[in-house]
Image 1 (cartoon, rainbow, N blue to C red):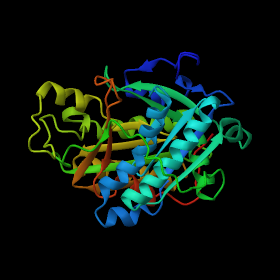
Image 2 (cartoon, one colour; image 1 turned 120 degrees about the vertical axis):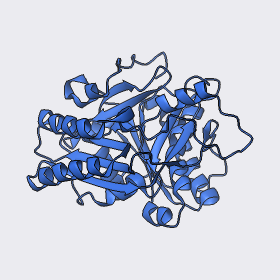
Image 3 (cartoon, one colour; image 1 turned 180 degrees about the horizontal axis):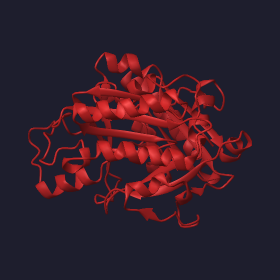
Image 4 (tube, rainbow, N blue to C red; image 1 turned 90 degrees about the vertical axis):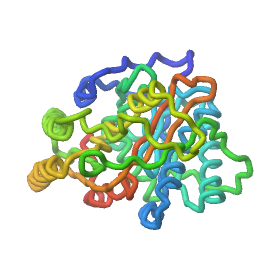
Length: 342
């Protein structure tokens, strides 16, 4: 947020803190929510276009931040799309950026990027909310977490055709400075790369969901490096000429978004098969009780898309997803038309 906006909420250094609903603060009523997603991302990933899907998914964050002149607005990367919040005076900037990235995705990547924009008060008028907390993954990277069911409701409505930003023949290319995919995929070191989405059911109490989420995380984070999917040793760059400084790589790994709360758990982890089996059994039982909705996908590698804001080389962000469909494949398992509790 710019200096003329309210100060952002404090950042928590422990991920468990963002599971506590009382740590979230509501966004102002007149703020706006932007949502993007790649249409039919499943087909694109099935044909091996994982990196293009992730690049398109992260493009709106980069384009709006560069156009707005700051990256301190709330946002979340979702694999085949993104969501972010903005003050009302940024509406025209956001609309232009969203049209530009949609045109870029179609013209340069051959992908259809659906985009939408709606006010927070519209979300609240329909019984949901948009509340935020901040998680400091490292001293160089702080990510926004979202709760209240508002983003999920907004995504559902936009996919129904409401609040869409109509595409046009936008000729101005989006400013994607700082957005890049410079690393080869990371192979699993422990068994499989897990993409996991877990959402509370309509009637599930926030505290009960937090208890279940902590139980899941206890299993998945047991063992070396809490199942971090980014290797401890430097990864392999796509450019063979690039020399990787071990200190730089350590900062990259620490600043990745492999754990998120986005109206539910959103995780990319390197786990043993036994860990995944145990969690799947717990979540299957919880879904049968009507407590949660979940989707998971197993794959061999993880992908990283990086965003280094212009002029702020120390403030780097690293977005994680699974290579073989990741979050979009996990989302296929979610029961249709289910929305998280408000």
